[in-house]
Image (cartoon, rainbow, N blue to C red; front, side, top):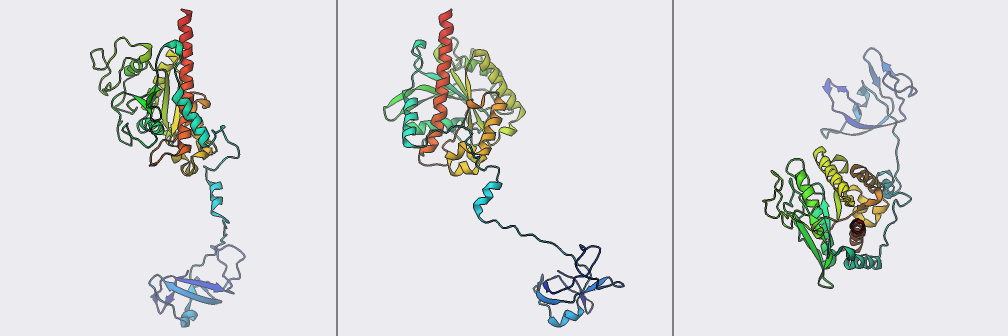
Amino acid sequence: MWKGNIDNTFMQPYLISFQNTVYASNPRCSPGYGSSHANNSNQVFNLNGEVNFGVNSDGQYMNMNNINYMLVSDLEVYSVKAVVIQQASNLRQLNTTHEVSKQWREPPQWSEQSFQQLKDFVSRYKPLPDMKISEVNILLVGQINAGKSSFFNTLNSIFRGEISARACAGSSQHSLTTDLRKYRIRNRATSGYLNFRLCDTRGLEEEMSMHLQDMALLLDGHLSDQYKFNPMAHATQRDLGVVLNPTFQDKIHCVAFVVDGSSIDVIKGNVSQKLMHFRSLMIERGIPHVVFLTKLDKVCPMVDEDVRKIYQSQACKKAIETAADVIGIPRGHVFPVKNYEQETQLQTNVSIVALTAMRQTLVFADDYLEDQYELQSDQ
């Protein structure tokens, strides 16, 4: 590219290629690019090679007769290296979401048989008979838009045999769930209900959120199904839906923190404090808790394409470790989850991931029942 004067008329830059040209030395050029042909008085360079011309920014062609008038006042020499990418797939190796050579957790079997075995375990689950309760209560708690209601919809879809949306789910500035819902799931194959309830709560947020007193009342079974949370005041004995004398059946038997894996690093301070307060209440009561880590398809493009890659993705592994550190539980208690969101039909592998998380949660709930039975027996 050059600028010059022809008949005292300023010319716009042209695209020019040079062959067999001896480039002039100049303090602005790298050394070793030829001998000096500069006109020291005018500080210009005579171009002494063959020139092929393009067009300037105005679309004008340069006349070949003008070559004798070509004086360059500014000359820069660049060294350009070309990088050849042989295959587009090699780009994945540069991405932080690439597969690791070793699976970070033993995955379930990705087969129809494995799906049916997991489904049978969940559908046949019954609480410890010695505790004399018909079902266990699994509490879903977490930040807004994390996927609590979507997890219920996912599990309900699996046992219904088609995509369903009983619980209101989606993204919103404030929690879409305002009431406590203790959902039952009906097994379409048997027409009977499963022996657990998924308790969906109001999402935790900076301002409008569940009060700390309500958290304790909820765990102890004082809040009934369809109790309406008041973000301006905590529950009192006079409020509709408050149970004064709850039974063991009314209490929470296991808690699942539902955490958005794509924003685990940026949970706001007030929300994080509420999560930690919730956890301290669980520890006081000996209630087991797990983490359902959602939206990992947004963390890793590989998982978005194929959910089976969830146990091979470096990004998902890091998200699991971060969630374990934030909540303060072992990594083995953090379960990746892919909710049905954009799908319009059930997919075996997506269902396997959800059922794997639910299976282990029921096992932990039984651990709590066993502990409570031993405590009662010792009294």
